[in-house]
Image (cartoon, rainbow, N blue to C red; front, side):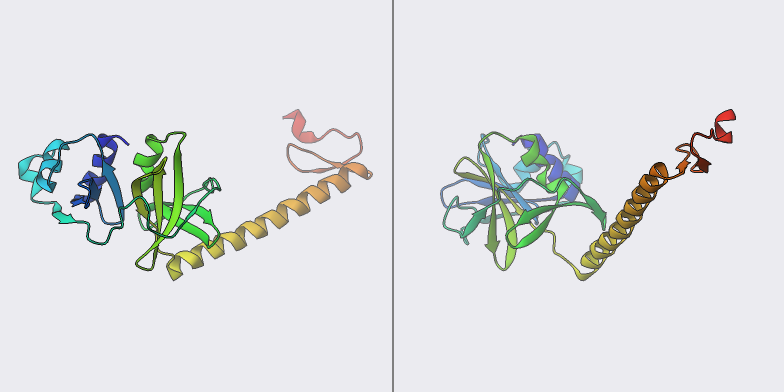
Amino acid sequence: MKFTDIAKIAKARKKAEIVTTTNDEQWLSVGNAAYKLEGLPKMEAKDFLRLAGVADGKAERWMRADREDESGIFSDNGWSEVELTADMAGLSIEYKENILTPLYTTEGAVWVNVGNMAPVVAGKTAYMKFFLRRINGRNVIAVKDGLLLIALIMEFPMERDLLDRIELLYEQCKIRGAEEEQRKEYDTFSRTGSHTICERCGATLDYGEKCDCTKD
């Protein structure tokens, strides 16, 4: 992952928490996502802001923190996890100013913020894999490059309102699908009977008759 892609996420949130692990690896956390910082000197949050090009006068508007990883959530192994082998759903929705996309898992769909996935997708390699971890009662997408953990992406919570909107969308799509199927059946019947349907305006014509709309 590129530093510029990671910094873009931090700038959008105005949040930079530098987490240092027990083996001196460093991560940038923006709350609902964290990214491993590689190829960089050891730093604090104030150093990250300077490196990201944030002027000193604007730095005061940021939420900044430095801490040690005492829970071990940034370890490559040691957590129960399941590899996600299915592709992303290939669709996205806008909800409360977030662009969300679902990942299909054995536990159902896990929704993630597309923006949080941007540094991962931009730096994707042939060895990158996705795993589902359960951390503090929440689903987390663990991204690994080979055997090494490089990102943690929190799921977007399945709120009742979000579920209701998805169910409504599903029902509306079912209705539209049924209407389309009925139209196809009607068109097939019309073309095999004594009448045809004008493809331009939908008028019913005697077989072989030319529609008046073609004269326009």
